Image (tube, rainbow, N blue to C red; front, side, top):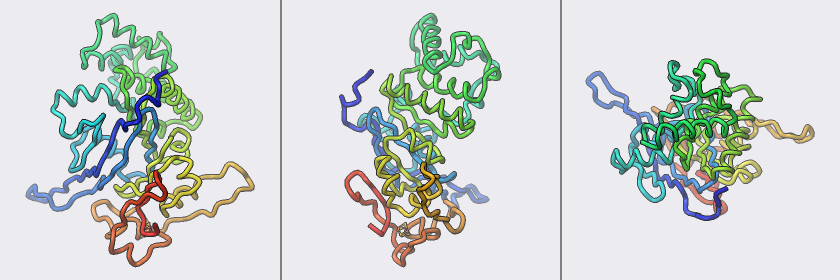
Length: 326
Ligand code: SF4
């Protein structure tokens, strides 16, 4: 097993990342912008899982896709081992993508129904020009076993698998090129609860065996709690709080995080937690509220919150929160 402690530098350092989508008018001009990701900063340490949580539409999936440059950023930096992904040439990007892979919510839609699983899994090796045909086949067989599938699955087609098995194939495809970092975008949201825990335990085992680093994106805060070392909470394109998982769950500081956690059942029947019901709908990222973007739903909003966006502060070290209460 690789030594997690051998290198303390962040594997990925994201600074001030913005991704705005233009809304075009009748003449093709930009009339408005959807601020899907707005000034997000965080880092990923080697061998850790950073969980990214928030309601649907908060920008967490766009953030993952922008880091991989599946969509181009509007502004900011994403340093992978010190090199800015957003400044990379196509050749450098291709090389970097060997290190950084993605697992999607619905692997079925990205599995070619006419190809056997063996051929699908060999594809990334061909793209990156890795190994001889025999070595590629051996790698596929080894990876199938690693993700809990069998050698006989090599010859089957995607429609012959269950949802959980397909997600294992999605994970196997990401593993084929021996990546260091995997961005898991809602990898268990479409699965039954019993299958969810199998897949998450599989991911944890792979992380231990291979020293992988995960950016784990999910809307289910209980799933994020189970797998993550640290957690970031997103609201309307912004990172409102980030801290070690235990700190987030025992001492949530941002009113939005407190509301999110209040809906999670406590393990003990005696334990009670007051449910915080947020008023109103999630505002549109086309027209985010002024000042603190959460002020229209915040139960403890103050006058300053409507006028001034809060700075992100460390309270204490390692626990970052963007709120005027601190
Ligand atoms: Fe609520 Fe104000 Fe804090 Fe925003 S800055 S979360 S509105 S208290």
